[in-house]
Length: 382
Image (cartoon, rainbow, N blue to C red; front, side, top):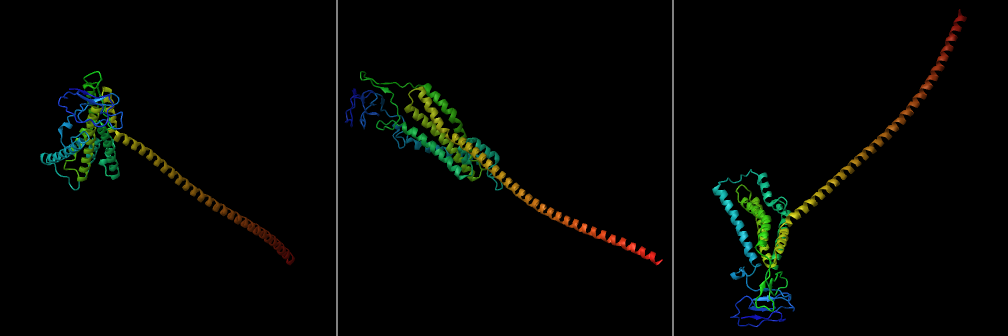
């Protein structure tokens, strides 16, 4: 009923045995865990517990997901496709239900041709829902480059969360697995014991942390999905609202899924589960941190551009003043030349006046002499 082979440095492949009587969890134990003392660990498909070279062990019992035995349920990584399809289907159902409700229940009139495609109130509501401090707000804009950047950030977050899920798969032959063995199987004992310190309190704390952070995003994502179904919106606006709601809902839901899966595989104490929750929350917040970085860079760029415009304006003003100063200097030179010309003219006129004055003086002298001659002549006549 018991076959304990751990600690014997066995390698290769365990031969097929009659395990009819090996029914308890601690009945068949071998060194089939990772890390191993050998390049390839022992392959034991019938072992109930596998131990590694560190003396840590874990049960090979399949989890509830693997017991389903359907396509897409082989492990937590395969289930991502089912989870994603479920979220996308949920998003379409919410959007269609909102459209039908708005059309037949509320009897809302369709958007008129003269009406703006996105009103100021609708734009504010959508931005408040998706988050004005997130790069996801770019999805609601008309700039394709900004939308592509937002989707790239979403892809990065999904990829990061995917690594958490893939590392949580319990694979006793994969050294990349982060799965933590929590069992101990002392060689002087017939039973193995689970030494994990994680209890319901840890799961409650983790659930509160995740709910406090993700519940808002999930609600806002659903609000956008409901918002996209209203008839008054233009088709392009509906598409943007749907994509925004889908991305926010998908990231939040996938983060919650990754948190549960990763903590189930890794966390073995309350501090472990809190630390893992905080790390996943940080991944979810990457879009907000990037937005703050972009806004900081934009503020610096705007300041730099404003300074450059101010410098250019000052240079233009200096050039204008320089040109004005050159014009004034030219005018001063012209006036100086005119002044010289006037001075020369005045001098010439002064010389002419002197000549005329001398000529007048001579004429006066001649006149006086003539008058004297006349008087003298008159005296002689009488």
